[in-house]
Image (cartoon, rainbow, N blue to C red; front, top):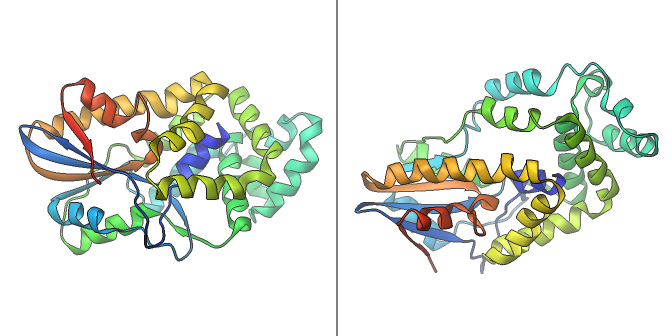
Amino acid sequence: MRKAFVALLLLVAGPARADPALWMAHGANATVYLFGTVHILPAGEHWLDASIQKALDASSEIWTEADISDLSGSLNAIRHYGMGAAQSTGQLLPAAYRARYEKLAASSGMPAAFLAQARPWLMEVLLMGALLKQAGPVSPGAEGTLLAYAHAHHKSTPTFETVDQQFALMADLPQATQLVSLEQQIDESSEAGPQFHSLVAAWLAGDEAALDSQVNKTIRDRSEETWNELIVRRNERFSQRIAERLSGSGVAFVAVGVAHLCGSVGVPQLLRNQGFAVERVR
């Protein structure tokens, strides 16, 4: 599950030869481009290549997972789904993890009163963010650039989920599952930087197999429940909405976390299973 959050937090941009994966799905009178994103990028990365720009220019809609510009809604969702723990996360962890956890929690920069009430899933997200910052300067991810382009060019910006729905997905995982995932993050905290850069390299290369192995296989092997909730069922919902859009007309650009586009249960394959033609844009 730790790498599930890496996948939800990551997905990067790149140098001049960057070639992140882009798919094109065809309906009778509609085309939908599918692009995998990451939510935190190494500072100064440039990933918007000619193929992606051409797809954006052709599209009247830019779809994302949720409205990341809704800061007020995000803060309310954090308070509702991530706070109010009756017992601090540190106290819930086995004794062998507590000292390392407290050290990592302090590195997040969050006030002690906040840390005392944060639930395990939220602490995992916060600690991952702190570890990535320690690995090097970071900047907001691809969605911000895509939405800025959409607003500047007066394109509509539909979403698949609300911010509340996204936070609820993680908050509804059993506490025991959340704690095991947090323990794994503590155990592997020294590898956060290398894992981040490995994912970035695979994303920049458009290497579906590497991304599927590094993200999806890891989630699936560690927790079938997490895999089903965070990846499989969401992929099914995403692909159903896209299929409905393909039954219409015109061109749309869909940007979701790249983990949702890889492998046998990725959105491109689910659309193929429904009879749509889906191809990689090279």
